[in-house]
Length: 175
Ligand code: SF4
Image (tube, rainbow, N blue to C red; front, top):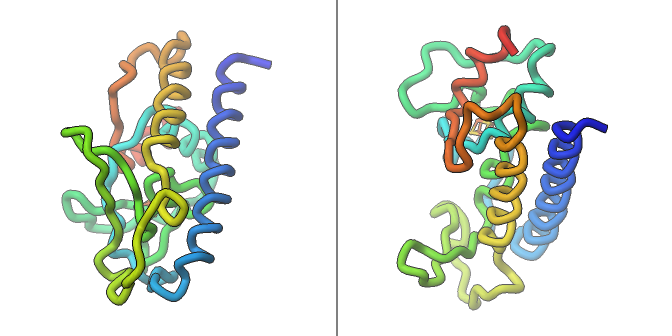
């Protein structure tokens, strides 16, 4: 199997593990979360690593994907009528939204981030067992991305490069 294909398979495996982890957390917190289809409060034109960008591109390039018209700067082109038109292939950042995300900030301190619409009456403690360990999964994503951009077909990208979700539209016809 080609090295490239192996890296994309490892990425899909990571996505599967993240989906499993988020499902478990959603069960734990379901009474404190208002996330539902139709709420797009956290959607925007995120910047993503090439490994995610090209994985999504491979999946959507031959499909008829609906795209939003007259998209304002910073909005996601795949948000149509408050629903994601690439939901099955959406990036990892879109899979973890709404959950309590635990990560270390630039000062090396633990920080917690969650949608302000959720946990409005949460009076328990957040700890490592009821939060999403963002650093752990981001490190794995970074390492997989590093593997990909080291391959000949992807050498135009550096390991810290990020691409906007919107750029997928431009690449769909040419990839
Ligand atoms: S890819 Fe989908 S879930 Fe992610 S920001 Fe765009 S519309 Fe929202």
